Image (cartoon, rainbow, N blue to C red; front, top):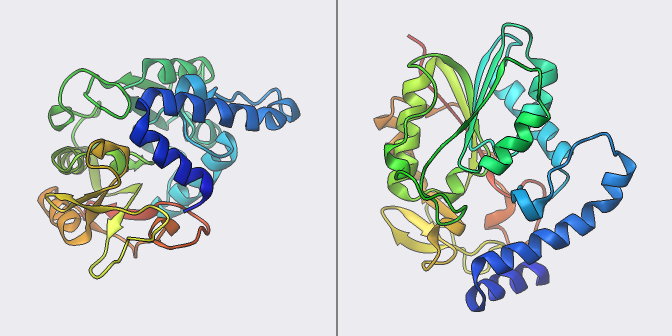
Length: 278
């Protein structure tokens, strides 16, 4: 584990979580200042307000878009669902890719993040950002339990969906429910690209970049006091949820470095699932 990551983990144990996240996000904003000055015309959400995660907002968005486009064989007229869209990191590249018949719907529990996304896709009638009033200890939502949330899409209306760093913060019952909803809204043959942490049989995670330990119902967590901070699932459990949702794995998992002892490439696992064609 890197010294900075180890320090953050220690700080979470002794300080209130909002304080730690606020300081961490402020430091990331300071680190981003050169990129902001270099490209002042590219809108970048301030992490201190939007909690968008680390790395270059637009570069990472483009990288995920490229993976999503290739993995789903995405067409310009596709109807896309962005689960946990945040400030619209994937909406920006999609806005230049989808044509007049393409439709994007993103949902998130942060109205502040959605406001940023709406402001910077203004004039794009094809783009819809929906507030998901659901509970989350990680991101502060205080509405309905996520297990009861219905995605803002009609049955079998979505060609392709994505969920970047969403399932890594969902409790078991919520993760299973979100997969069921994905199964409901995807068209036959439609695909969902998601990132998360899959626990393979025999994994030893004691010295991993992200050390997880058993929690409940096939879930492993970094901190049992704050399970939604980082949560992974045993592969057998995850695949059972897929079957129950009418979904299946569509490609081999691209393993992230979270389970290694050194950092390399992508942090979370990249997972592609599909709703079988009729």
